[in-house]
Length: 148
Image (cartoon, rainbow, N blue to C red):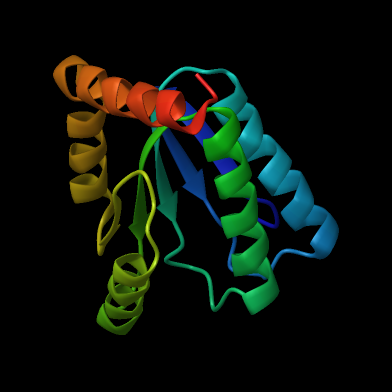
């Protein structure tokens, strides 16, 4: 596998499996465009990203992903309900947790060691009762920001 795989079989949960090789710049931009396309649908969803095979992400790649997510959040507030990341080591999960504490996002970002707990968590986030609360909050933020 050289390119990420996108599984919509459990939509509105999107499972993304990232290949072990680092993406080239062209592949990374294609990946970001593809993920933005899911957000542009305007349907609330959760991403579960399996990066257990990935050796590392470059600082540039992490920055580009964060910038694109921020742009998508501004254009489509409340659509991306959460991001679950499945990581292979306790050290990676600890680093992810520390980064999540430092970076303020409008959605939960949680790390997992296995896929099934991540999917269970995602199912909770897409439940109708949880979605309506998230969408109300996103609408309030948009109104205050003058975008809604």
